[in-house]
Image 1 (cartoon, rainbow, N blue to C red):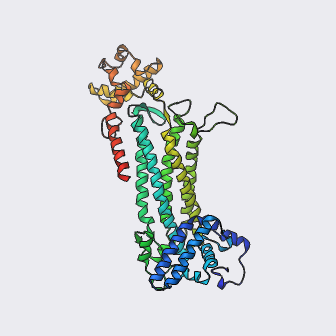
Image 2 (cartoon, rainbow, N blue to C red):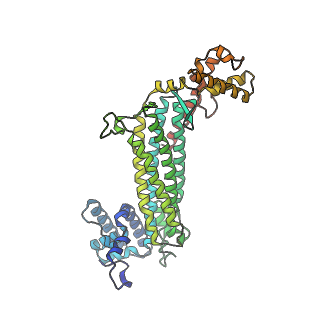
Image 3 (cartoon, rainbow, N blue to C red):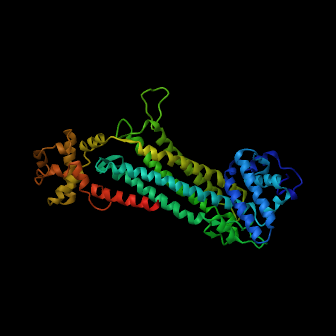
Length: 460
């Protein structure tokens, strides 16, 4: 079959141009969406009297056969036909003859490909939201088992204050919840129908765009044909949200890497999610969190790539916009794999509670509570801060923890200290004392868990 646009040309396409111009090597991922959109389009053409019912049925039957043959590998894609749309139309012509040419009435590849990508991204975002919810469920399950597990909380990667391990994990629940909300909101921009915009200015045929929108499940229709064919904001938005999500995954991965090191030994990842060294037999490497951390840059790159591609494009469609697909496809695949592996890795992770507790018991992360203790005894906070700093320096020099200092040693810094100081700076009390909304106390963490479980149940 000749080129579908070849009537105006007198020469065959240069072989290198043909290879560079073709997108079928990657846009074949849009097969399902292209068939779906074409069936809705021909249904509308028949309803509007633009093709006959008999032609419509023949075209639909042919499309379904082409779809099946491509899925079964009975026929193959051709670079000569450039993209998914022209490959399908060519195969449809082979299947049903010249009537296949009526399918493209009142549409352009410009509005057709945009429709395919809207359909594709809607499906993928909904799937990713389900996977992200599974990660949240894994976090809630681990957190519910570790409300009373205490570990050091860090700022500047220096021990800061003791916190509940559940509290630490739930911080990621809320990050991922914001990611879910962003994805859900993006569906408003994704679920808009471009089909019917034609190449740029609409069509002269009396089409029914509302009918197509209803059949394909779109909530709205682009009101401006030029915007419809040139808009890629919905992909940029997806890549932006994906980048934020991957940043959250990367931060969690970094913590898993640190926590599972010999220096920390706070957690141990299941063997199924680690690898070894080809030279050093003792090694157990957290390769999966490292890969998740590394793939974050890959997703960032796709976002910056598309923004750069779009920044100088005049209205409407330009061939540069063919660069919108590979980054989107790769980001979907990267996110899918990341979320699929993250949930079971979190669920099977062994938490070394005693190591966490000993780290807190023997450090100075209870220093703030010593200062607060002095404030409650009547010392101004700035003065209490200085006193505590001197007490910590003394303890470091003596190689003792604050809990190991005697009352006599405390009296060097303040005569307000009494026997109740030891209860006030015990790790359990330090955690329990932060009993305000959003705090790390067991009571507040249990409230967080209730909120998280309620959200998961509502979304379900």
